[in-house]
Image (cartoon, rainbow, N blue to C red; front, side, top):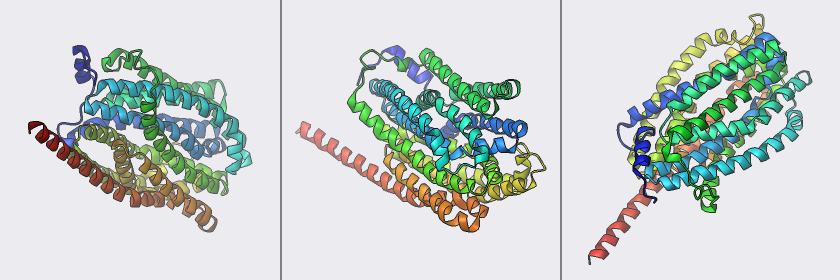
Length: 474
């Protein structure tokens, strides 16, 4: 391990946050709340895209954007998963206080992100129209869908930039700074939506450009902040060199997490194709309810991301008991919020939908309320998916996340291919709850197995250390 200078140690203490000591519940809340508000603002400006498109461009434009949701999630989710995976070794080395290795992981993750972003941008932009055709996108919204998603895919480098840097910042225990950057990005996104759609008449492509530009700006701000504030991240020329050992660890963490999102999204793509077969009004209903659900699900996402950092730091410090305590505390938080969110959506779901739709769209509004009611009734299984899956990833077992993604994919595929043709829109409403339950059936036993395995590894290591000490004394 590299011996740190005094200045490095001071910055490590003052800017970063050590989650290996103190009350787990208190630490998780302190970390989770800023993260929640950051995700809330992220969803807020995503919602503003939808609101402005729905109100000013009409229901068909809204359906054009909505029809791209699953393919958007499949590709962008992979980017986000990879970046979250790259941040896990950083959190682990921070918990272990090995700052030289931490910087090596950061440097190698930058090179990998550049490579991934370049290859993905070229590939998905070339295949964009074909993918929409494979998904049976209705012809009356095909051009709008293509105009929107092509621009989003052009912005993949900006997505990598922001998610990698914000993930590294969070892995060092700072969840407040990304919140500030997202607030700035949200305001910029809304302003650009209004300017590009209303003033420049760019249609749905304007909404996409607003999202990409605001994401790029938030990524650049993250970069400037890291350079100025984190002395611990001052990377030397030697540390910038590609190292196959570090690349292998990063890929072992990042690629499975990215695939987990993408494999999950394959089921969503199949389901979206089934929704598309029901017509553009069904697409509009699902798009609207999905936006509302994502807004209300931000706390679950924040809990998951918090547990990835919390578990990563504590496993790096060898404190598995604190990991278990953190999981229990976060599950209690998830249950309380799930009950609250369900009550709000059951009572006011259709009224919230009026933000996106005109009151004359009565059929669409009824379908929105139906989907929100069914989904919110199963919010605790969703909370459990996020908490347990991200904890497993933070512990360093990212490949298990792929299997959880397979469970969700299978569930959504069964609903999309087998149940939607028979039961229609009603089957769509139960697709996500079934997927969450399938994932939990795998994740909970997997988590218990991993913890048992880690406890045994630590116990065996302690025995070896005792024997070594005894051997030296004798």
